Amino acid sequence: MATPAMTPATGMYTLGALTALQLIDRSRQGLSGTETSRVAGLLSVTDKEMARLLNQSVATFHRQGKAQQLDAATSERLLLLNRLATYGATVFQDKGKFTRWLRRPLRLLNDRSPLDLLDSSTGVQLIEDLLGRIEYGVFS
Image (cartoon, rainbow, N blue to C red; front, side, top):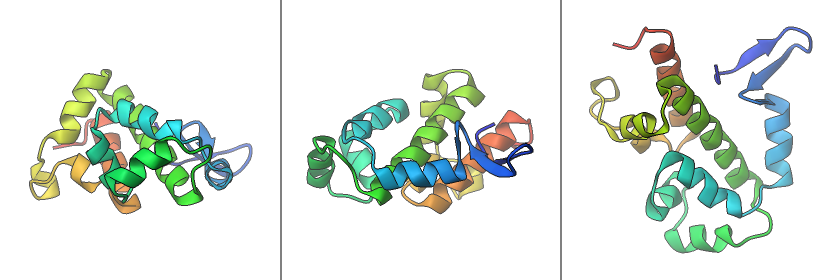
């Protein structure tokens, strides 16, 4: 499960393949600009949608796609979205099913789609929680 889980041996929280501290360190180092397009592909979103998820203009999104190194905030957001995309594809056992679900308005979200909420870290956490509920059969 991609939601935070305590690793008994280290007492550290893991976030997918990264512990929380590793995610922080990796985001501070900065990801390559090419990660923006890769994560957009995982979520099957357009450049305009990805720019919104990163709280950027489309022009800034395109400029950052060519950057050697992204800033910490953008890198962290990309790492969180990457984790969410990986988790979603695992829960739905199919990337296409997951990306269609991302676009579907849900009554539980006041008729907003999960994708509409991914422009904030709180929204990412909310959608990860929903995926956890789906994974364990609690989603109604």
